[in-house]
Amino acid sequence: MVTSFFEHEKIVTTKQKCKELKKISEKLITRAKKSNETEVKESQLHNKREVLKVIKDRDVMTKLFNDIAPRFKDRNGGYTRIYLLGQRPGDAAEMAVIELVERKK
Image (cartoon, rainbow, N blue to C red):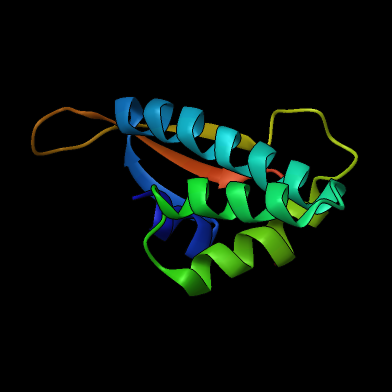
């Protein structure tokens, strides 16, 4: 789900899944930001390997490091936002949208 989130930059899912996704994605964006700020190659490689433990697609990882992380270079946190949509008709699960705060339109 994290891979899809970074690929599309927006996902509609249940409220509880959004909360978990927010925790994981914010940590990954912070790690990608730190990798872009350092000049030590070993540190950059370590951060990329740590992100690859969660995100299995190399294209999405490249997008995270080269496109998404630079957008948030001046922000110290709060990279995502959650909008509540109401209940799903079938099982009354609370639905929500999670998206990046600074999204490309």
